Image (cartoon, one colour):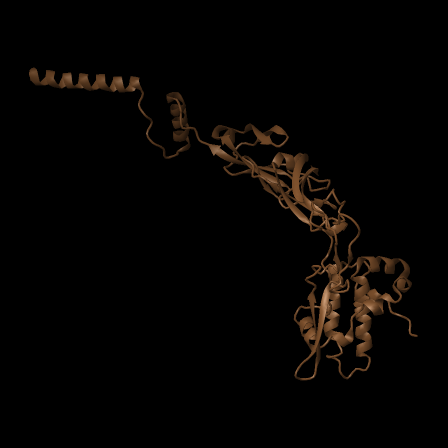
Length: 386
């Protein structure tokens, strides 16, 4: 008797392949190795049965665990009995395989479904990390029946499908081809089991609606889209099966001052035009508090100042981003007369084209007196003849 090949080698997958990868590999190879496609190959049926045997073991978590530990000795006799039945896999099943179906229907996965929880936090909480208490409504284990789903006794194999969870019907078509159709068993819901005395609280499901309180520890550097996974905190499995996972997705609220771009932060600060021209010091905001930066003379509008390490921390990493401060010149609108006069003199000295300097009260009174005196002199010359 020829030595059996390794089932992972038969399917062409790694030993850590996920159930979904195992299924995809089986579908891909079933399309290639099916005897109806290889009619001239005398070994086609043998290879296809080997493929079905490998898939039957590796697609079943319990069988796979035994195979990983003890090899073929752990599943001796299982593969042939539980593998693909070539006689019941005709042209109709091949059509399903080519167009996305499978040669044999699998039972519903009893594992609980994964869940998603969206959590909103502030930018400060994202920068320094935070603890959040969340309340998660989900399907939890029924405490009355301890997840078994039965009030008394144990589940028994479904008599309608003999515990397989599926019903097969074979027919021969007009061309003489043997066709087998496989449908989920409607008696047991494709589980292969029925419960004679279901739990009155959960109706035999082994789970019911509950709300769990969990503490989520969010490390520094979280960003919108960052995820935290809580193992086995999702929906409970069917009749005591493993629970799914809870995925907490982070959303960081927009900030009034800072704009985040990756791990860097950007902010805009108003800079007095005198400080921009003469140089000086400017107080700027950071997530850690206020900082004072030196402004060189002649700083222009829109200039970026870089504060290294004042940005966001890297998500679960050692480095920090930077903070960029863009300055916007602050032009005053409430100048005093003296300030306007000084600024006007400055502009004239530079040769700038500015509006004429407004007249002060004393200058206006002086010009009025001069106009009155000039008018008086004119009238006196007319009265005395010159």
